[in-house]
Length: 409
Image (tube, rainbow, N blue to C red; front, top):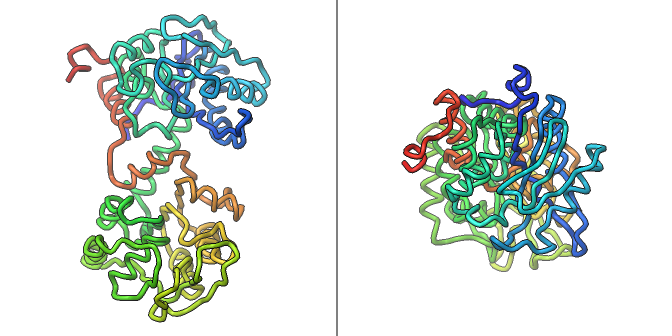
């Protein structure tokens, strides 16, 4: 993907003394008292900020947080806790500025955090007036928030149109490289694991992947619908009978390419959905009318693990069972540990997937862990993300910002 990279600008000495505006993803979870409970996204933003400071830039950073109402900054929407955590991680003061759209005072070597960008009127609908004002604040715009790359908003897309220079930060660059390696230029066999509660939420992803991958592993409620499509009983398990033809269509599309959607041969069931439910392992053909399928069985898990060991590239989105309950976590753990042990390049994304990776402690064994949820899913679906689109356009234009006519087009 042809984009301008911030790391290259720094290496070329084009950043010293410049005003650098970084769009980061600092949208972290907090408890009821406003304490940050998990700071992975803040930590992931540090390399870009340090890169800019080390290069001698005057640095501005902003992010969204939560779902604020435009024009209203409530205490719970403030980036104040983020500023405090950034200061701890960087070992320096981080000033938080409100009402920053018209003017920001920052000197080379200084860092300021700009309040929640989604409070600004016009942010979500990519208002060109707001976008131009943001662009006028900087010499270089750096997009480093993959989690927002699927949204065309003023602070993610509009500013990239009008800033003198627009480029990708190290985090976004790493996502682009990993996605390209996994989907655009994969080492074969390419295996995708797509799991979740409903086929309907990921049908377009399944259909898109059916034309690309050599093996499509489905799990969770999605697998139940595929079991039903294969003529197997699923008892009272979560499924979508109205999408059976769609599921069969995915199977047929894979078979036409000499690929497959492995159907579980055994499953783990329970009579109720609960952490202390009694687990029963049985053949998929033997599921009773009052059974809930909550995991793949050990034979299926082992068969899939062996196939993952022979993969060239693995894309993983979603646990294959109710891994939060220990009795129904074996399938997901087996898959996770197989991915960790496989020589294949692996990329994983999605909140539940990241939780499973953390639970089994395999972070260092996964080739790349994506920081985006919705953005990662849209990439799997084959969509071109707005952030990628505008950065490619800017690179193709030699870095020149959009003219009013081009911006309106």
